[in-house]
Length: 262
Image 1 (cartoon, rainbow, N blue to C red):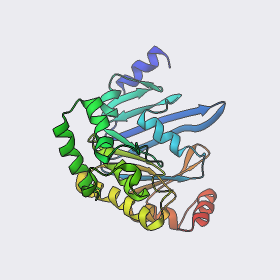
Image 2 (cartoon, rainbow, N blue to C red):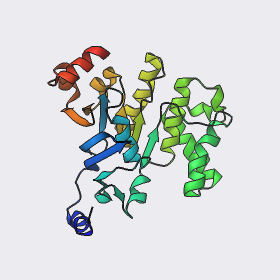
Image 3 (tube, rainbow, N blue to C red):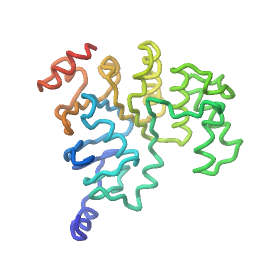
Image 4 (cartoon, rainbow, N blue to C red):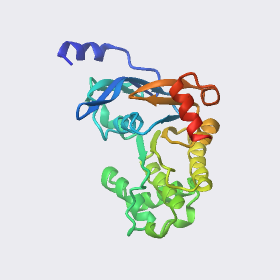
């Protein structure tokens, strides 16, 4: 993007949405996985991304989280222009601090206690005292139904318990937005339903928004405010989950819904 184009982008009014992605493009080794994708999220909204593997869902999450750099496109967050033409601006760090990401494989240190895992980021990034960290950890664990596991060793917890700890760890940084990438795919359906219920609870009680990649169509139909169907790097269909999943308009989504049989 030229200097003149960047100046014009800076002058363009920022979005009223909590987050607004415009023209996001990304290629890997000559293959374009995101093709000028536009996506918005309002404060406290739960948006579910569905589609085949390789359709661009997880890449979009990683770009929002700052783990993968877009080749092109703009991102507004909380009324600030934070990415212009794929380049991070000075406003990015403050916006990034409002985002937490939860992965499928938990990314917890199994040999450490729950308290130690939860303390790592607040201590290193925020420089908070042990007393403040423990108080916040107790609150975060209570929010995800793990109040009695502060001193448990993570390696001794079940899969569902570890995923709840992973959510609590994200809450330690006081985010306004959670990004969840296939966080329940390795869990049994009843356990997955409990973990996804925590996300709904956080929206209702804390106003925390969520962008969630999942194949759990039951959760999408019940709890999502909006579903976006990805196909070959674009959002091919988007809208109210009950309408979208029961009366899909595109052939690709009809085939996808039939295959998962929610």
